[in-house]
Length: 352
Image (cartoon, rainbow, N blue to C red; front, side, top):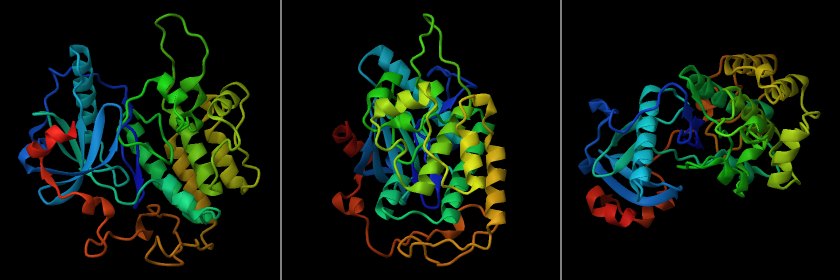
């Protein structure tokens, strides 16, 4: 699963990996409490797509939702693979719940595979940061964002789930091969731990060995970007950045940061995965920084936050308390005006 960030800061999981269980499509039975009658789904405008799925804004029992429709594939092999991926994703979403993770609403297997989640309105962190340039987030606000991410990641890791693709411009629904990730101009691997993509030759049939510490590395790059509002490895091409990180142990400079934040970042992106902290430790380090700097009030952009000059307390849940509640009585998002919702069965032939 890949991830998206909205306000309050929330990870949208669509490209994660669980090492606990592999399901065959025949043995996975969707729990009845998560089963959605497709007649209750109404599909609106498309808001994103990946190699094997499309995501639409829609309605489920009058609730605005994100509807992910998975293409079954053309060959029996493709169909079996997609069904197994669907089973893993539904199982994962249904058992992992956290305030900073997208809320799973339900799924249906027929007439097509569909996953329904809450729709996040805030947009991606990347878009938010780009709109702020050349300015930067106040450090307390940036650390608050990071705290939200760290708490969500701690929850995922406690369930044996490795994210592998933590970055600010999270995609909606993508299943990529390692080669595709290396050649994509999105530069996914700028945030990826080198052990995930290094070109060290493996014996035939041998798999790369990595663990949950790959997410700590990515978190360090995201935190660096939150604090600097710059592209990591700026001035390098994607391949140059990957080579520098994997073979020369090059990292973005953290010398301009306070010692406490620099220590968090540099410990998380260490070359040795086993030397990186886990997310429980990262959370404690972030809280310590907020506590020791609690007298500094964050500069909150008025267009984003409803309340100004709010001090983030040391036991803060992150940025959640600072974020506005969506007001459906105001302007209607453009996506909602483009198309009127259609009944699921009526729409499906046009969706694929």
